[in-house]
Image 1 (tube, rainbow, N blue to C red):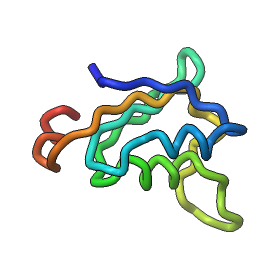
Image 2: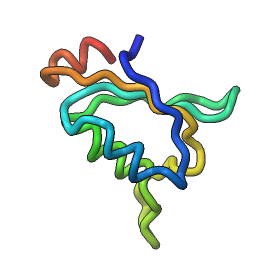
Image 3: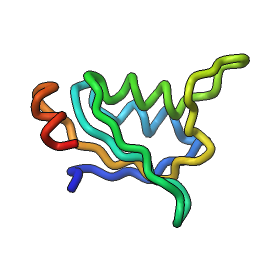
Image 4: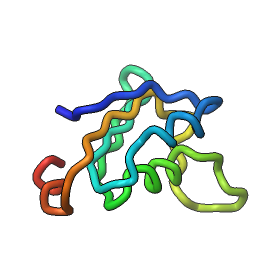
Length: 87
């Protein structure tokens, strides 16, 4: 179970992402009912979620889940080891 959950809306992305800590952690992105969730660990939650949920860069092949994600669940951790165990 992840400690925090936030509803995501593309029109409020800057406000939502600014509230997420810039620390190591594990996160889960959920979309519409029935869709597959996206789970991962990272060294910097805010930076990774900004890449995944920020405005898509033109001609970029990077994964962008901005239009699909509806909920962000996350837990900040103290280390990569702790993140691996939680994931």
